[in-house]
Image (cartoon, rainbow, N blue to C red; front, top):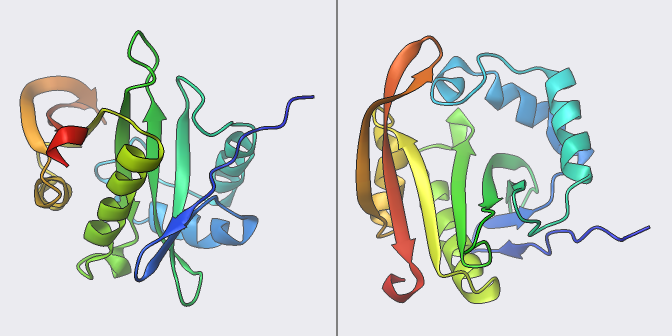
Length: 185
């Protein structure tokens, strides 16, 4: 049986980026069930059964596996309490070893404290320097101004504005595509 590669993790001044543990699941389900958090996400509600299913799916993934969406816990460095999560999509294709897609979610009570900016900064350093990726992309709902601001503060450039390109929760939604090259970092 092949050993799955797990995320080694890293830390910033206030945060630890690490694999999820079962102890994270109650907090994970709680903030994902918040209607304001779910507003720009693929789910409408979230409960412990979904959190457990998520955890089991993540346990079967190997970090860096082409095509996978590998979810990373963002925890407070002092308390180890979950403050949010991010995902790295290891894109398949001819350039699979060169490009990834990012997504991120913070619990409502952890927004506005600089955690997203700090976590993004650490994540970019990790992706460009440790994983040696050439390009990072991120899609953002055009109405999600805070998420766009995090990317813009991290020096991502808006490459596209897709107008009513996605049927999302029964309505046509618009998205921005952001990108950052290693040489721009």
